[in-house]
Image (cartoon, rainbow, N blue to C red; front, top):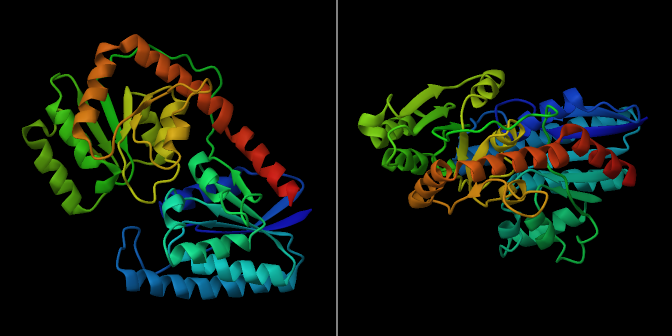
Length: 362
């Protein structure tokens, strides 16, 4: 039985924490035992942006994590350390952890859960440190082919990089029903650079009075105020704020809509769970080609299985919605291809099989 330390955030509603909790609950293998260590930085909220608060909380948590790792190493034979990362200040923790593991002969995986690596690694100072940190790891897991291609350009990294997408449970044999593409949903944290304001404006501008938008998620009061201002007299008529729903409630709600829209330009966008959920339900997705999204919305035959729009383009979103209303049969086909893609490439059993192969490779 191989023992794997999983260093990852376990609390909060962030994407990595959600992935981690699901992975711990559902990854069952007689050859590997997961030893979770929570690296959630205490003392700052999900939306905290103050640099010094982030740095202080991160350093305190890093010290605690290193002490926990050393205790586990002293207590038992550790074979693999699998750490998740969102880059930025966390790269310093990734560096320190890798050095400890090298000292003790422990194999290491740096599992990157963010999409701006191609930009980060080319920065003058931080990029050099990121390269140095990655070179210490035995494997580097990334979410998309664009990041894979960029990292493989570096000789020290080219044989270490593997695309490992996120996963989801997918029911077998879903039949794609014809839709009228009038009901749109945004599901996620209400963060402006998720394209939220542009989406609201696009729905308000749409010529069809039947097109409506339901917004599911929580956000700061100033964000909600801005949404209401953009919606104007369409609020509670064509634009509806539903607040935070549980994951089960959100998925049940998504079953009732026609389109899931995420026109994101969020810098740390990675592999949006709302898009995975939509694809698994056979829903049409409107999004941007950021991070892994372009891979996600490329069908098995290389064509599209969703609609990609330019970032910050209200007009593109308006046109995408209107296209769906005019070309309903073609939109239904996109939904069919999206379901086929998620079932074949992102189903939990498929992705976990890939994880096991990479564990064995170590």
